[in-house]
Length: 164
Image 1 (tube, helix red, strand yellow):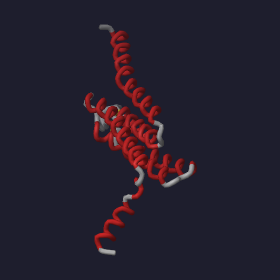
Image 2 (cartoon, rainbow, N blue to C red; image 1 turned 120 degrees about the horizontal axis):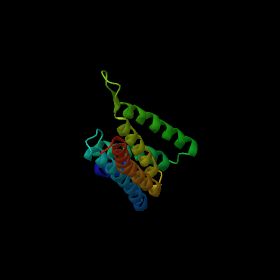
Image 3 (cartoon, helix red, strand yellow; image 1 turned 90 degrees about the horizontal axis):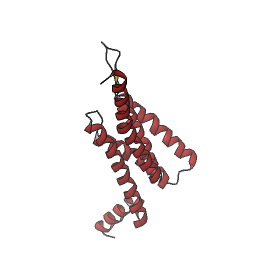
Image 4 (cartoon, rainbow, N blue to C red; image 1 turned 120 degrees about the vertical axis):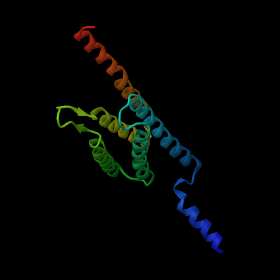
């Protein structure tokens, strides 16, 4: 066996986790959907001038999807997957905490909605990674509704209470 044949064999073996077309397509679609849904949430945040925009949300959803896809492909059981999800939620909590700021001179806290949005993006990524695409899409739509429509309703109610 030549050195080239060994190289090709090792390379093929190293990339064998996606050896079937069906598996490659399924994994690619899940990762793409996770990134797109995260991008939608991130676009809303970036469009309104808030921290953690498109790229951050896309990376969070993509990372969360990968964290559950890999053990699932390796045949992890429910107990192992439960521990993986617990770790993801705890780990993203640290990322989210970094987006929350408290002003020293005022009793004002900012970044809570951005933090909650990243937490939601994580859940969406986990849902997509586990193959629950419809649930992830619904979660994204509800998140966008909350960030846009509920915010608009609150503004309208406050204007009505405080006068024109």
